[in-house]
Length: 139
Image (tube, rainbow, N blue to C red; front, top):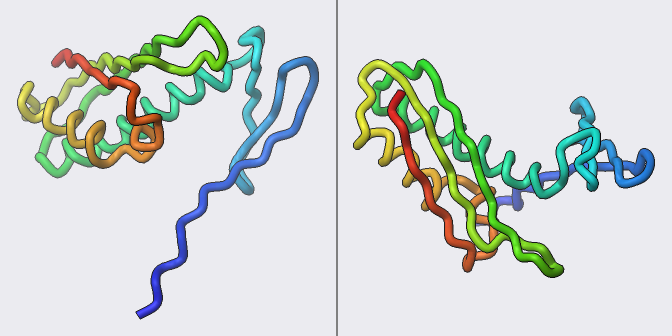
């Protein structure tokens, strides 16, 4: 039996001016990225945003399977970075606020843990020595 073809993710970007760039996935609207964080989200912030939205997608799906009627989901992600180059993350903390009918702390924590430990491909792609933590508030 032949192995399935690898799944490929692709983006393209172009330099606009200074440290500003436009980029997108094929056929998708472009977004501005700013290395100086003057006029747009920075690449480092986008990495945290990617982790937040990847995790949020998992949480939505898992809570739906738990028969929770999701009403709100907000995630703030804070990354601690080294002072010297490369200024990589040394720790990442998720603050999750979630509300829904049929939701309790056990279901919320289970959904978050499954995402962060098993399903979120963005978090799984980070260096394994970066501690990932979370806290949850049931709104």
